[in-house]
Length: 418
Length: 107
Image (cartoon, rainbow over all chains, first blue to last red; front, side, top):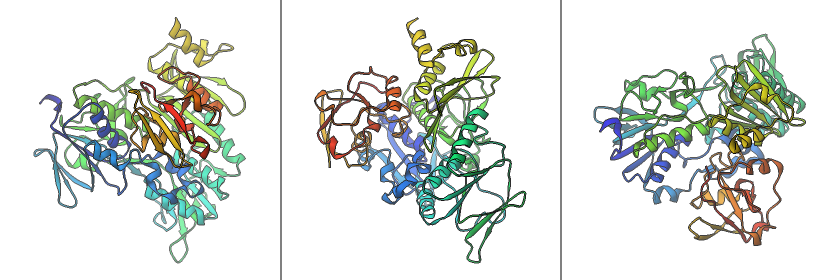
């Protein structure tokens, strides 16, 4: 069948947010065929965002991952979604079948790769010492939470979302915290300097030490192989009994590559999220897709992206094929600050700041006369208005945004009524 | 555990024992009550867990705080007196007997 529409069965590899949502949306769209959801983790599908935030606080991780479940076990039974625990080792495209490490195999009419990503590790001496953590899964979080409970001094490598969210939890738990970042400011790849500066202030005000423009030379351990210090590139020695490495994520593309599918920092898919094989799609963190606005390749690791991709593929498999055009959005929470980003900054030449009192503002990013993205700090109303403005899109010029009394919500309402 | 009644769009009522410390949103999601999307997982980021608290039980929850108030301006179905984000309705013994109605759509 052309494009693999209306397959008799769907196998989803990976049961994170994207894989799980694919199965859920297939049933919501009335799909009657067999749905198999293969999970590489020994837990029901769960949400990851709390892992670096609430799940680490007050021993919440001790109560187990059920508090994170996206749906209860009965849901999958009632919806006839076969949840299979196992590791897929091979895609046999000719036979349309995936094989698992335990020797079992599943035939597919359509295959959805939702293999996600893994934490990038550090290529320096001592990276394998005990007490050196990465954070991706509920299991990682439980190990990190236990280590945090026993630690006095935590060093975080990388001032990205994961690193800074963990740093805020560690500091709130009374630990001495140092963050080491090779770039000159925090969240350098995702937010403006102004928003970055807000987070620098928030972390420093809480008593966290932030070292920017600083590489890591080595991690040092004691005789038992437990980490005791981080050595920076300029020779400083930072004592640590816990190290979190938060230096980004690498997509799981090995299965796709081994099956001969094009891969380039993610499984390459077209605007409809199909791979080069019309019987295989890819969604979420592992998918490299053409950006709706620019056509540039994007690979995004966010709940919105995983859910949006999943819904689109489930729609296509039930007869509604269209290109992916959802607006990306993201959020982070550190100390009392909520950061929300609507849209994607693929280059901007002008910023307009909307001030909303102490520690609350939005930065509007324009390229020429066009609004591209909005960063909101403790301004949830701005964020939701921005999502609507950018999605529709409602035109907004920098001069209008700079006018006294301008609000995003007011602009949205005026556009709706006009 | 506090009893919370969820009334879905078709008028079906379900009474669920929801553990203290969780949220009205999670009580719905983990018991398969249709009509709550909660795309952000309960972090007040998406306004897709909108519910209408029944008038008779409106004094039970804590009042709306500013962040929730902002978000309620952007729900898919119209905001009314009883509108709340169910992720922000933290379950305590005081919520026992709460009745919430689900909107027609969340996004």
